[in-house]
Image (cartoon, rainbow, N blue to C red; front, side, top):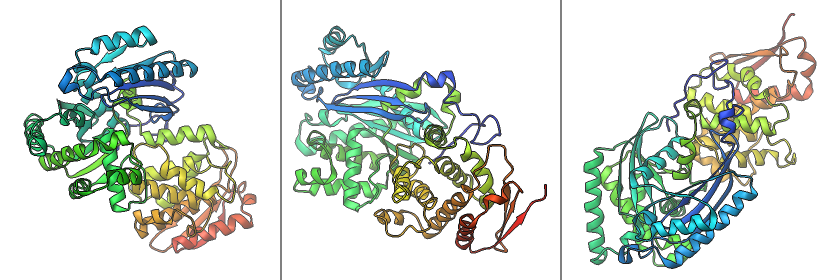
Amino acid sequence: MNVSVSPQTGDGSLFGKPLFDDPSARALSRVGVVDVGSNSVRLVVFDGAARSPAYFYNEKIMCALGAGLSDTGHLNPEGRVRALDALTRFQRLAEGMGLSDLSVVATAAVRDASDGLAFRSDVLRKTGLNVRVIDGREEARLSAQGVLLGWPGSYGLVCDIGGSSMELAEISDGEVGRRVTSDLGPLKLQTVKGGKKGRRAHIKAVMERLQSEMGAQRDRLFLVGGSWRAIARVDMHRRGYPLHVLHEYRMTPQAVQRTAKFIREHEDHEALRGACGISSARMALVPLAAEVLWRLVKTFKPKDIAVSSYGIREGMLYEQMPQRLRDRDPLIEACRFAEAKDARMPGFGKLLYQFIEPIFKSAPEQRKRLIKAACLLHDVSWRAHPDYRAEVCFDNATRANLGGLKHSERIFLGLALLHRYTNKREGTHFEGLYDLIDDKTKRDAEILGKAMRFGAMLWMEKDAERGEFRWFPKKRELELHLSPDAMPLFGEVAEARLNSLASSLGAQVTVKKRRR
């Protein structure tokens, strides 16, 4: 993952002035969007830190508007009724949430159907909602912007699959480049003549045309869309993968090939659906989507593959962001918002980072970014029962809706926060997740957690002088220089925590009192 962050205000670090209190960011504090797709209609209401918002409300109704469209030229009559009912419900929900407006977009089914305009008129008459129909290139652009919401500064090829279409968009340095659309949605593929052989020939021919239009795309492939996420669930099941978080889940081209074969040869799709937690309507499309994904990977040969939970809806939110907000790191902004909302002493995370930073001064910037995130989150779970607080911290970090985090980074962050509250990590029901990182990374997370655990003992007023750490890694010596005001805080418990930190560092520790 690439995270490209513009220079910050204030101290020039990721701890610059927060933007979630800025008027332009507050305007995005609660935004509702509706995506009327060929297969489903979904309402998402975003809330929280505008750069990395939480999902205040998220509801999907499978309507299959595009079912049979290729044969009849009309929207599926039953799906049309379901979609209209869904939009009526969503409009009423938005009123109850105090939303002044819902942004509604419709994609391939409504734009291709001969009765698409009549459907939009029915929606407007019954709900007052104005459905904006977008073409394939615009759909590709919004999906790519959704990826940029979670991966600022990223590069590669975004592939968004819906029920009736599949779009590709190129992203580089935070910008959307070439875009193309196709009819490779699973609902459309159901009507291709010639059986399995004819369908595969059609997929291959379309994919070769897309490659000729997009050119070589050998970087990362970002997968957007429910069918891709369903395939990722099957891949997790096949591998026995322990962290069931779809966003940033990685697959290799070889894994895609094996999973496509696994789906193709699996005799009981109903049992597979149940094991993977996939709806019946979605599972019916998975075998066709797997054929498309296999051909996509075979044609474009990406270096790696990442699943994105962010797509067109998040792209609609990104569209409304001022550039200075887009440039912010979504992880740090989300953590800052969590600290401001839930910590006992908002603002202490920055002071904690400054205090423990000498121990990590040689760490790469990507690691320092995680250290900053941990310091911001170190106290947000204080309301949890003390017996379970460490596990709550780990669970929150590994499964939270946080952008800009690889799975291995989630585990590192979770372990650091677990060690913020306990010295040992053995005996939890999360032990199966620890193997997603190597032993050195586990040790680094333990050191970070214990450093925060000790640093939290020096809880003083904001501008007080605490002292400083001095770390000499070659000599394995750790010095703690405390100010006279901080010395009374260095009691038995604090000393025990400092010794535990030194033990994890494999260091000798010396405590010195500063002169005034």
